[in-house]
Length: 256
Image (cartoon, rainbow, N blue to C red; front, side, top):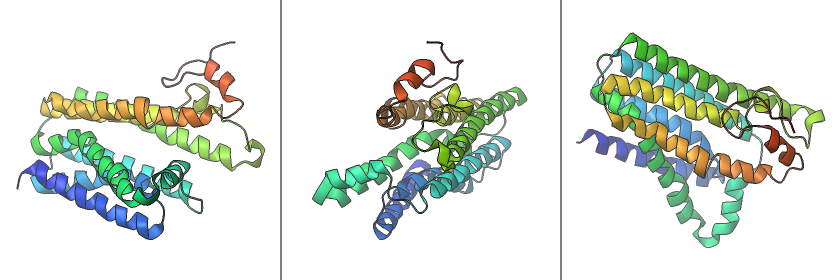
């Protein structure tokens, strides 16, 4: 069987299983946990299929696993003991009788398609990579580490902020959130560009750049920043915060 067809079918089965888990748990936000774990699933399948245990393949596998585990665990703890995420609750009401069909197609299958596209750099490295120069590894890894730090630290700072009773009803504007309104999203995009650089120099294929380009587009134009900004605008402090603080790239706060 063709390598990419095999991985595509495996991913379809993976997302379908998560769809049935969501029905059993009666919450669609379980898809957010499936997201990070899905990249790990594809990475492991790809390296076992190709039996390519070269340095670039092992490095990409390690980075994807570190990122996937942290993200899935963070989302699990964030959702634990709480009602279903507001986005999924809104869709549950909006979709009515077509809820299950639209959930399967618009949440799980669509997510599977996007996951496949973003995993392209991982799949190509496992298929083609053999050697990579030390400077390419250093540059790509450094970019990945900075991105991972922004995502992990940003998430931790937000979680800590929200657990303090004195911050109830307030908008976080400290730590990394003082320099960008979305440090975790900035970090997510940056780390995928780090992976993309490693993948490019390991394969010499421009196709690997599809991965960071897709995740950049999704986060900055579709489901990441636009959706969260829409919700944040409801907060009374957001207008001033947005005037002072960069929306994406970290930067010093503007004086008003």
